Length: 237
Image (cartoon, rainbow, N blue to C red; front, side):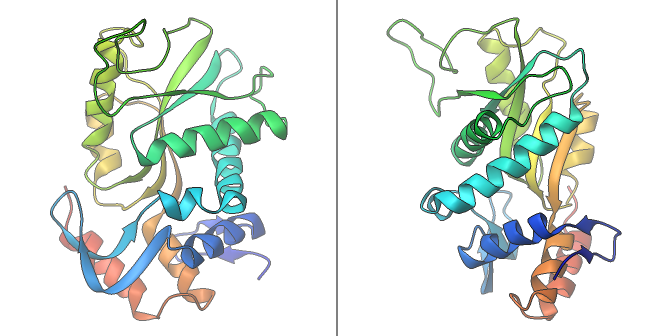
């Protein structure tokens, strides 16, 4: 399949289809007849993982990193500082690192010639040693910090991560970082983030479009698209 146009008008290139084919095979995005319970409490037949299903497959991790690096580098302005990605623990951490590695190795750069770097956000506040903080390292004026996450449902984890960046001195009091979301479940997270003051939100894949691609590639049963569409209508946050 050389290219796929979804009902929403999204155009999936051969490289997108390669990412999605791999995502279904390793169950990074998984369909299950018995529903999963999401963090939001909603039950869904589709779950976005991004843990060992990503890191056990370096080839897939590299493809994901390339997709993230390309989208972020295309979205920044020429006057922006170097993008420094901070993954929201735990799934976002590997995504941020993968994008930085691919950006450097394949020379994927911003309009001003910067490659991507990354920092690591801790799951728990470090209260000892040389850097007692939420993020490894001190903030730098040479960077523009991005939050990175594997999925968005209600968007709740992004403002929580912003508060940690504020507490660590990575943001000014009235500042919100750009956000990268690998899969948006289309249940209101983007709108809620915009209402919370996040002005730059980059999404790699919308769940309904991805489900359509999985169906068209013969990877998921045909009824999944209708199930996902119904879930999106029924559970808006």
